[in-house]
Image (cartoon, rainbow, N blue to C red; front, side, top):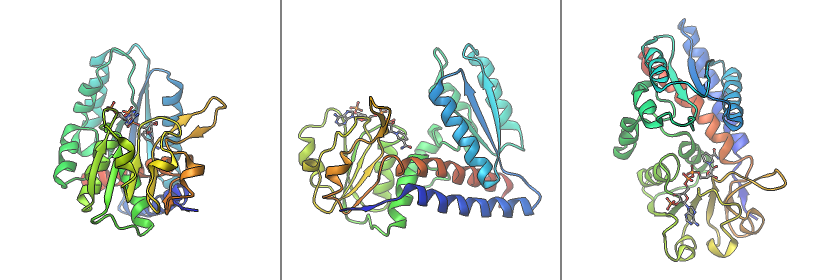
Length: 283
Ligand code: NDP
Protein backbone atom coordinates (compact mmCIF):
# COMPACT_ATOMS: atom_id res chain seq x y z
CA UNK A 1 0.00 0.00 0.00
CA UNK A 2 1.35 3.42 -1.01
CA UNK A 3 2.21 6.15 1.47
CA UNK A 4 -0.40 8.91 1.36
CA UNK A 5 0.82 12.37 0.42
CA UNK A 6 -1.40 14.22 2.84
CA UNK A 7 -2.43 17.60 1.42
CA UNK A 8 -4.36 18.61 4.50
CA UNK A 9 -1.29 18.22 6.71
CA UNK A 10 0.84 19.92 4.04
CA UNK A 11 -1.56 22.83 3.82
CA UNK A 12 -1.57 23.19 7.61
CA UNK A 13 2.24 23.41 7.56
CA UNK A 14 2.23 26.05 4.81
CA UNK A 15 -0.49 28.03 6.59
CA UNK A 16 1.47 28.02 9.84
CA UNK A 17 4.53 29.40 7.99
CA UNK A 18 2.41 32.04 6.26
CA UNK A 19 0.72 33.07 9.53
CA UNK A 20 4.15 33.61 11.06
CA UNK A 21 5.22 35.79 8.13
CA UNK A 22 2.00 37.81 8.34
CA UNK A 23 2.81 38.48 11.99
CA UNK A 24 6.32 39.63 11.08
CA UNK A 25 4.93 42.01 8.46
CA UNK A 26 2.32 43.31 10.89
CA UNK A 27 5.05 43.94 13.44
CA UNK A 28 6.49 46.39 10.90
CA UNK A 29 3.15 48.23 10.89
CA UNK A 30 1.88 46.83 7.60
CA UNK A 31 -0.99 44.57 6.57
CA UNK A 32 -1.18 41.86 3.94
CA UNK A 33 -4.24 42.29 1.72
CA UNK A 34 -5.63 40.22 -1.14
CA UNK A 35 -8.27 41.66 -3.47
CA UNK A 36 -10.62 38.96 -4.76
CA UNK A 37 -12.70 39.88 -7.78
CA UNK A 38 -15.72 37.76 -8.66
CA UNK A 39 -18.04 38.46 -11.56
CA UNK A 40 -21.48 36.88 -11.81
CA UNK A 41 -23.10 34.20 -9.68
CA UNK A 42 -21.53 30.91 -10.77
CA UNK A 43 -22.02 28.66 -7.70
CA UNK A 44 -18.64 26.92 -8.06
CA UNK A 45 -16.83 30.27 -8.29
CA UNK A 46 -18.71 31.46 -5.21
CA UNK A 47 -17.54 28.39 -3.26
CA UNK A 48 -13.93 28.93 -4.39
CA UNK A 49 -14.01 32.60 -3.44
CA UNK A 50 -15.54 31.87 -0.03
CA UNK A 51 -12.85 29.26 0.61
CA UNK A 52 -10.10 31.67 -0.36
CA UNK A 53 -11.49 34.32 1.98
CA UNK A 54 -11.72 31.78 4.78
CA UNK A 55 -8.11 30.69 4.20
CA UNK A 56 -6.95 34.32 4.28
CA UNK A 57 -8.75 34.96 7.56
CA UNK A 58 -7.14 31.87 9.08
CA UNK A 59 -3.62 33.23 8.55
CA UNK A 60 -4.29 36.92 9.19
CA UNK A 61 -4.39 38.07 5.55
CA UNK A 62 -7.10 40.65 4.86
CA UNK A 63 -9.27 39.73 1.89
CA UNK A 64 -11.34 42.37 0.13
CA UNK A 65 -14.07 41.03 -2.09
CA UNK A 66 -15.19 42.89 -5.21
CA UNK A 67 -18.39 41.21 -6.42
CA UNK A 68 -19.65 42.47 -9.76
CA UNK A 69 -22.83 41.48 -11.61
CA UNK A 70 -22.67 39.03 -14.51
CA UNK A 71 -23.49 41.76 -17.03
CA UNK A 72 -20.47 43.85 -16.02
CA UNK A 73 -18.85 45.54 -19.02
CA UNK A 74 -15.27 44.75 -19.92
CA UNK A 75 -14.18 48.38 -19.45
CA UNK A 76 -15.59 48.46 -15.92
CA UNK A 77 -13.76 45.28 -14.92
CA UNK A 78 -10.51 46.49 -16.46
CA UNK A 79 -10.78 49.82 -14.69
CA UNK A 80 -11.38 48.07 -11.35
CA UNK A 81 -8.24 45.96 -11.87
CA UNK A 82 -6.26 49.08 -12.78
CA UNK A 83 -7.50 50.80 -9.65
CA UNK A 84 -6.43 47.80 -7.53
CA UNK A 85 -3.03 47.83 -9.27
CA UNK A 86 -2.51 51.41 -8.15
CA UNK A 87 -3.59 50.95 -4.54
CA UNK A 88 -0.63 50.61 -2.20
CA UNK A 89 -2.76 48.84 0.43
CA UNK A 90 -3.58 45.96 -1.95
CA UNK A 91 -0.78 43.41 -2.24
CA UNK A 92 -2.33 40.69 -4.36
CA UNK A 93 -5.11 40.61 -6.96
CA UNK A 94 -7.06 37.53 -7.88
CA UNK A 95 -9.78 37.49 -10.52
CA UNK A 96 -11.85 34.35 -10.13
CA UNK A 97 -12.12 32.44 -13.41
CA UNK A 98 -14.02 31.60 -15.53
CA UNK A 99 -15.50 35.02 -16.27
CA UNK A 100 -19.02 35.16 -17.69
CA UNK A 101 -19.23 35.62 -21.45
CA UNK A 102 -18.46 37.83 -23.32
CA UNK A 103 -15.80 39.12 -20.91
CA UNK A 104 -12.28 38.71 -22.23
CA UNK A 105 -10.29 36.77 -19.61
CA UNK A 106 -6.95 37.25 -21.35
CA UNK A 107 -7.34 41.03 -21.43
CA UNK A 108 -8.26 41.08 -17.75
CA UNK A 109 -5.33 38.86 -16.71
CA UNK A 110 -2.95 40.94 -18.81
CA UNK A 111 -4.09 44.03 -16.91
CA UNK A 112 -3.18 42.67 -13.46
CA UNK A 113 0.11 44.17 -12.25
CA UNK A 114 2.81 41.52 -12.63
CA UNK A 115 3.95 41.94 -9.02
CA UNK A 116 0.37 41.50 -7.69
CA UNK A 117 -0.50 38.50 -9.89
CA UNK A 118 -0.85 35.89 -7.14
CA UNK A 119 -2.31 33.29 -9.53
CA UNK A 120 0.78 33.65 -11.76
CA UNK A 121 -1.36 33.73 -14.89
CA UNK A 122 0.06 36.95 -16.39
CA UNK A 123 2.17 36.18 -19.48
CA UNK A 124 5.20 37.84 -17.90
CA UNK A 125 4.98 35.55 -14.88
CA UNK A 126 4.40 32.56 -17.16
CA UNK A 127 7.55 33.48 -19.10
CA UNK A 128 9.55 33.89 -15.91
CA UNK A 129 8.62 30.37 -14.86
CA UNK A 130 9.97 29.12 -18.19
CA UNK A 131 13.40 30.65 -17.51
CA UNK A 132 13.35 29.70 -13.83
CA UNK A 133 13.43 33.29 -12.53
CA UNK A 134 10.03 33.63 -10.97
CA UNK A 135 8.45 35.36 -8.00
CA UNK A 136 5.15 33.51 -8.25
CA UNK A 137 4.26 29.97 -9.24
CA UNK A 138 0.77 28.87 -10.23
CA UNK A 139 -0.81 27.44 -7.11
CA UNK A 140 -1.55 23.87 -8.20
CA UNK A 141 1.87 22.91 -9.60
CA UNK A 142 3.53 24.75 -6.71
CA UNK A 143 1.41 22.73 -4.26
CA UNK A 144 2.43 19.49 -5.96
CA UNK A 145 6.12 20.40 -5.72
CA UNK A 146 5.69 21.23 -2.05
CA UNK A 147 4.12 17.82 -1.39
CA UNK A 148 6.92 16.05 -3.27
CA UNK A 149 9.61 18.05 -1.45
CA UNK A 150 8.16 17.49 2.00
CA UNK A 151 7.95 13.74 1.44
CA UNK A 152 11.68 13.80 0.64
CA UNK A 153 11.12 12.52 -2.91
CA UNK A 154 13.96 13.43 -5.25
CA UNK A 155 12.99 14.46 -8.78
CA UNK A 156 16.53 14.60 -10.15
CA UNK A 157 17.07 12.17 -13.01
CA UNK A 158 13.63 10.64 -12.55
CA UNK A 159 11.34 9.80 -15.41
CA UNK A 160 8.48 12.26 -14.88
CA UNK A 161 5.28 12.03 -16.90
CA UNK A 162 2.65 14.77 -16.79
CA UNK A 163 -0.71 13.88 -18.32
CA UNK A 164 -2.51 17.09 -19.29
CA UNK A 165 -1.09 20.24 -20.87
CA UNK A 166 -3.28 23.08 -19.64
CA UNK A 167 -1.69 26.47 -19.05
CA UNK A 168 -2.59 26.44 -15.36
CA UNK A 169 -1.61 22.88 -14.46
CA UNK A 170 0.08 20.59 -17.00
CA UNK A 171 2.55 22.95 -18.68
CA UNK A 172 3.86 24.74 -15.56
CA UNK A 173 3.93 21.38 -13.74
CA UNK A 174 6.23 19.97 -16.41
CA UNK A 175 8.44 23.04 -16.20
CA UNK A 176 8.82 22.80 -12.41
CA UNK A 177 9.77 19.13 -12.64
CA UNK A 178 12.28 20.05 -15.33
CA UNK A 179 13.76 22.76 -13.08
CA UNK A 180 14.32 20.01 -10.51
CA UNK A 181 16.21 18.02 -13.14
CA UNK A 182 13.51 15.49 -13.90
CA UNK A 183 13.34 13.98 -17.39
CA UNK A 184 9.89 15.13 -18.35
CA UNK A 185 7.35 13.87 -20.85
CA UNK A 186 4.06 15.73 -21.39
CA UNK A 187 1.05 13.74 -22.60
CA UNK A 188 -2.33 14.98 -23.84
CA UNK A 189 -5.43 13.84 -25.66
CA UNK A 190 -3.56 13.17 -28.93
CA UNK A 191 -0.77 11.17 -27.28
CA UNK A 192 -0.47 7.70 -28.77
CA UNK A 193 0.15 4.63 -26.61
CA UNK A 194 -0.38 6.60 -23.42
CA UNK A 195 -0.11 3.50 -21.26
CA UNK A 196 3.39 2.73 -22.62
CA UNK A 197 4.50 6.18 -21.49
CA UNK A 198 2.76 6.36 -18.10
CA UNK A 199 3.90 2.89 -17.12
CA UNK A 200 7.54 4.02 -17.38
CA UNK A 201 7.02 7.01 -15.06
CA UNK A 202 8.82 7.19 -11.73
CA UNK A 203 6.72 10.27 -11.00
CA UNK A 204 3.31 10.44 -12.66
CA UNK A 205 1.21 13.61 -12.43
CA UNK A 206 -2.31 13.35 -13.83
CA UNK A 207 -4.39 16.45 -14.60
CA UNK A 208 -7.01 15.67 -17.21
CA UNK A 209 -10.42 15.85 -15.53
CA UNK A 210 -11.61 12.27 -16.17
CA UNK A 211 -12.70 10.22 -13.19
CA UNK A 212 -10.55 7.12 -12.49
CA UNK A 213 -8.96 7.35 -15.94
CA UNK A 214 -5.55 6.08 -14.80
CA UNK A 215 -5.80 2.42 -13.91
CA UNK A 216 -3.24 0.19 -12.18
CA UNK A 217 -1.98 -1.29 -15.46
CA UNK A 218 -0.89 2.22 -16.53
CA UNK A 219 1.35 2.69 -13.48
CA UNK A 220 4.83 1.39 -12.74
CA UNK A 221 5.37 -0.58 -9.54
CA UNK A 222 6.66 1.86 -6.89
CA UNK A 223 5.79 5.03 -8.82
CA UNK A 224 4.92 8.33 -7.15
CA UNK A 225 1.40 9.16 -8.32
CA UNK A 226 0.02 12.69 -8.05
CA UNK A 227 -3.67 13.04 -8.85
CA UNK A 228 -4.66 16.61 -9.65
CA UNK A 229 -8.09 15.71 -11.03
CA UNK A 230 -11.28 16.79 -9.31
CA UNK A 231 -14.36 15.11 -10.71
CA UNK A 232 -17.84 15.01 -9.27
CA UNK A 233 -19.35 11.51 -9.41
CA UNK A 234 -23.11 11.01 -9.98
CA UNK A 235 -23.43 10.26 -6.23
CA UNK A 236 -22.02 13.72 -5.49
CA UNK A 237 -18.66 12.44 -4.22
CA UNK A 238 -15.39 13.98 -5.33
CA UNK A 239 -13.02 11.70 -7.21
CA UNK A 240 -9.64 12.06 -8.89
CA UNK A 241 -8.34 11.10 -12.34
CA UNK A 242 -6.66 8.03 -10.83
CA UNK A 243 -8.32 4.78 -9.78
CA UNK A 244 -7.12 5.25 -6.20
CA UNK A 245 -8.08 1.82 -4.79
CA UNK A 246 -6.14 -0.15 -7.39
CA UNK A 247 -3.26 2.26 -8.03
CA UNK A 248 -2.50 2.74 -4.33
CA UNK A 249 -1.67 -0.98 -4.18
CA UNK A 250 1.09 -0.46 -6.72
CA UNK A 251 2.44 3.07 -6.12
CA UNK A 252 5.02 4.01 -3.47
CA UNK A 253 3.34 7.38 -2.80
CA UNK A 254 -0.07 8.65 -3.85
CA UNK A 255 -2.24 11.72 -3.27
CA UNK A 256 -5.83 11.12 -2.17
CA UNK A 257 -8.78 13.01 -3.68
CA UNK A 258 -10.08 14.85 -1.76
CA UNK A 259 -7.32 15.80 0.67
CA UNK A 260 -4.30 15.80 -1.65
CA UNK A 261 -3.51 18.47 -4.22
CA UNK A 262 -6.66 20.54 -3.53
CA UNK A 263 -5.73 21.81 -0.04
CA UNK A 264 -2.16 22.45 -1.23
CA UNK A 265 -3.45 24.59 -4.09
CA UNK A 266 -5.40 26.72 -1.64
CA UNK A 267 -2.42 27.07 0.68
CA UNK A 268 -0.07 28.16 -2.10
CA UNK A 269 -2.28 31.14 -2.90
CA UNK A 270 -1.56 32.40 0.62
CA UNK A 271 2.14 31.87 0.06
CA UNK A 272 1.99 33.89 -3.16
CA UNK A 273 0.12 36.68 -1.38
CA UNK A 274 2.87 36.92 1.24
CA UNK A 275 5.44 36.98 -1.54
CA UNK A 276 3.54 39.83 -3.22
CA UNK A 277 3.44 41.79 0.04
CA UNK A 278 7.18 41.30 0.58
CA UNK A 279 7.91 42.48 -2.96
CA UNK A 280 5.76 45.53 -2.47
CA UNK A 281 7.19 46.42 0.93
CA UNK A 282 10.78 45.60 -0.12
CA UNK A 283 11.12 43.06 2.69
P1 NDP B 1 -8.11 21.23 -18.88
O1 NDP B 1 -9.43 20.72 -19.32
O2 NDP B 1 -7.72 22.63 -19.16
O3 NDP B 1 -6.98 20.29 -19.51
C1 NDP B 1 -7.12 18.91 -19.54
C2 NDP B 1 -5.92 18.31 -20.20
O4 NDP B 1 -6.09 16.89 -20.19
C3 NDP B 1 -5.76 18.73 -21.65
O5 NDP B 1 -4.40 19.03 -21.91
C4 NDP B 1 -6.19 17.49 -22.45
O6 NDP B 1 -5.51 17.30 -23.66
C5 NDP B 1 -5.82 16.38 -21.48
N1 NDP B 1 -6.63 15.19 -21.71
C6 NDP B 1 -7.98 15.09 -21.76
N2 NDP B 1 -8.34 13.85 -22.02
C7 NDP B 1 -7.22 13.11 -22.12
C8 NDP B 1 -6.94 11.75 -22.39
N3 NDP B 1 -7.90 10.89 -22.62
N4 NDP B 1 -5.66 11.36 -22.43
C9 NDP B 1 -4.65 12.24 -22.22
N5 NDP B 1 -4.85 13.55 -21.96
C10 NDP B 1 -6.11 13.97 -21.92
O7 NDP B 1 -8.03 20.90 -17.34
P2 NDP B 1 -7.15 21.51 -16.13
O8 NDP B 1 -5.71 21.30 -16.40
O9 NDP B 1 -7.63 22.86 -15.79
O10 NDP B 1 -7.62 20.55 -14.95
C11 NDP B 1 -7.42 19.16 -15.00
C12 NDP B 1 -8.09 18.52 -13.81
O11 NDP B 1 -7.50 19.02 -12.63
C13 NDP B 1 -9.59 18.82 -13.66
O12 NDP B 1 -10.22 17.70 -13.08
C14 NDP B 1 -9.62 19.98 -12.71
O13 NDP B 1 -10.84 20.05 -12.00
C15 NDP B 1 -8.49 19.60 -11.80
N6 NDP B 1 -7.89 20.73 -11.11
C16 NDP B 1 -7.65 20.55 -9.79
C17 NDP B 1 -7.06 21.54 -9.06
C18 NDP B 1 -6.79 21.28 -7.63
O14 NDP B 1 -6.56 22.21 -6.89
N7 NDP B 1 -6.79 20.03 -7.20
C19 NDP B 1 -6.69 22.83 -9.66
C20 NDP B 1 -6.90 22.88 -11.09
C21 NDP B 1 -7.49 21.86 -11.77
P3 NDP B 1 -5.64 18.33 -24.92
O15 NDP B 1 -4.80 19.50 -24.54
O16 NDP B 1 -5.08 17.56 -26.04
O17 NDP B 1 -7.08 18.67 -25.05
